[in-house]
Amino acid sequence: MSKILVENTFLNKELLDKAKKDKVKLIFDRYKEQQPQCPFGLTGICCKACFQGPCRIIPNAGKLQGICGANGDLIVARNLLRSAAAGASSHSDHAKEAVLALLKISQGKAKAYQIKDTNKVKDFAKLLGKNNSQNSNKLAENVALEALEDFRRQEGLFHKSEGDYLNWLRIRATKERIQLWKKLNILPISSDSETSHALHQTTMGNDADSLHIFYSLLKIGLVDGYSGLTMATDIQDMIFGTPYLTKSEANLGVLQEDYVNIIVHGHVPLLSEKVMEWSKKLKKEAEKLGAKGINVVGMCCTGNELLMRQGVKFAGHVLQQELALVTGAVEAIVVDLQCIYPSLQDIASCYHTKLITTIDFVRIPSALHIKFEVENADKCAKQIIGEALKAYPKRNKSKVYIPKEKSIVYAGFSVEAILEALSKLDKKDPLKPLVENIKKGNILGIVAVVGCRNAKLQGFKFHEELTKILLKNNILVVGTGCWAHAAAQEGLMTPEATKKYAGDKLKEVLTKIGQANNLPALPPALHMGSCVDNSRIAVLIGKLAEYLKLPIHKLPIAGTCPENATEKSFSIGMFFLTLGVSTHINPLLPITGSKLITKLMTNDMEKITGSKMLIGSSPESAAKVIIDHIKKKRKELGWN
Ligand code: BF8
Ligand code: SF4
Image (tube, rainbow, N blue to C red):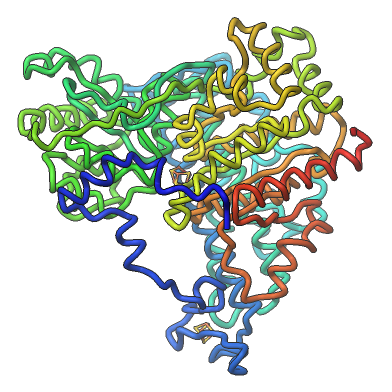
């Protein structure tokens, strides 16, 4: 058991007490109600793939096969592939929404938007071989159409040799990895066909070869990585601009008593950017009601998106979405898609808060639905703000409590922003200072953290403590998602944090880079964005590998998903693993019911991808396994 077990300190203690007083049931209460959780589910040996089931494998009782004859290995492998396919579908749908928006913008059908990063559009048109025009709208249309191919392509699904593979993988992955994936026969054809194929493959009576299913799992990691994460990030940067260094505030203390408070929550920034814009334009309407203005704050990955590009205040991570409403100070919570708890309407109805759903396939009973489409973005955003303004006079002052907790956060570390910061040390060769310091051991290695907070780990402060141990050991930490909220709230994303938490060698390097950029130091934990922005990390890793002329798996880097909670974060984990980045995943995946899959994930896959899943159930044990891995890689390179 971890020494760092603490009682919910990251969760705004006063609000937990207030929830009890207000008789609001929270995720933590429901978590308790669900105990004990089913051991078959936890170890992955429960199958519901057909209606003869559910079947459970009970080795001690000699029950080694389900009704159809599937054994434990097969059941675990199939369940795992289905989870990853669900995660990859989510990220691909997100990317698709952004691409369709870009297409409409380029064709003049979505007049509320303008393409902000036209240089990025040009660069991608060139990469895709579609730069046959001077007109930036035409180029954007070309880019969007090529991106759409990555959802549509079908040729070669049944006979690999005939087919092509993802455009986005071709233009964004390193040559070394593409060659390896070609050899492994895991280059995905298109996201829609591969994810639906994975569902087909894992139905009753299809693929019974667990090892073969494991290769499909690697392929789905690539679907997630390229036609999900990377495409979503790249296209969103084109529309809304590439992020650069910005400063803001984090935690629920960013809600303001004398303002109309609107929380934007979810993942795709198409609507939230507009809500932000209209909150400024409609400030006077709020003043007429006696408020000082409209305070839009961001929750979960929508929060990350708005913070990265506009410095919008950063309200909280996934486990804080309910608590935010318990403040009694939120007029409207506007959601798009993913990680939105179905419980929100129950909580909103205890206060004056309007829950507004906006995406056609994401509905919550009793919530107000205002349909969002890029063609009516302005109208939709205005209507949403109108609802918040209507709710403001209904706020019950005796029910309001806004916690004091808030901290400073520096964000906006896109790859471009990192290179720009480094270029102040070496204009011609910006990667050189980073690479030289890694080689010398001033930076022992880089660890990439994938977000999520998991209710199972509510007492651990896993993200925060793991990050601190890594920093102390001179490891630069970069990350995304709900980790970013956790790290920001803990004060790990400021120049002061470098002084306080970084090991001496790392401190010296970050101070030098920071001072060259008019900062006391570069923060030691770099906010690289939302969960789709794990792609930024992959691009950075690819650049380092190419600079060093080394395959990715030889670099002293690791990934971690310390509070894995969603199918999406698991599919990101599979992307990192397939990329060659050994990745710690916690809590234990539901694989322990299969010796074969457990051994594959934690050991044997190293022979396939050069990487493996690392295990550590406390911040200390996770840090140890990650640091040992980085030291081993350094030793193999002779970089001691
Ligand atoms: O995509 S980190 S809990 S909010 S899944 Fe969800 Fe996990 Fe948070 Fe963002 Ni990512
Ligand atoms: Fe049982 Fe096989 Fe059906 Fe799964 S697919 S529920 S193991 S019969």
